Length: 276
Image (tube, one colour):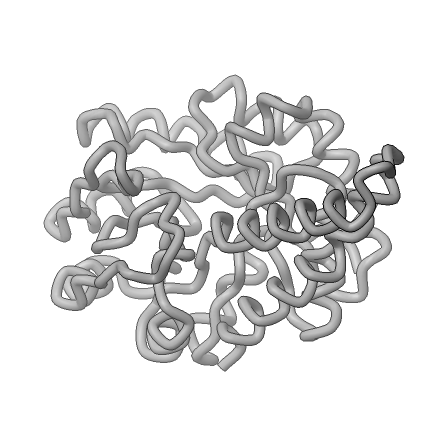
């Protein structure tokens, strides 16, 4: 199998009661684990490079890594830029082989968000790349507060930007270490009604319980869940265990290799929970 676009994998979710996991990549080991997990579950996977990852590893390296993993995978793989902060970053990602970009204009006014997202979408679509936009603001646990997506703005945003997927704020929050978020189903229903047929995205998926994620996948047009924190927690626990098991060991490859299986198992549970 090879790289596919976000639209390719999300469109079937609108009618089959499933969703796709957008898994936050920070390095080689978790990226490998995510692809292995997807292969084991026979489901597509979205490998996501967010701002933290990009500050650690250049986009050309990430693009090459994602392509190598996709070319060897038995399932569809999306190479996705998460929280692209500018047209330039989105353009660079496209040039590096990403098949999907998210432009995050959530902090802008509605008109400015529409204008900039539309510019990214036009550029991306010309290159055969999918685009995710964000309307409303998904905040951070113990950090910036969320601003709920206004359903009255959704139809205009979808029409004027032409995005392939829309990230929304309905009670979800980034960086939650336990599943305590509560979804505003009335707001979600109004958003769906305003943009029927548009796949919706929930960032901060670690804050949603597995049962809630499954329900949303089956009953709504939420087709993509971004999952990072719970998998980073698994990685961190496995890394600490590997170091503690042999304090005299210093070979980083040996140490890091021991994180792959635990993260694969955790990612399998995430993917399976969205599979209907």
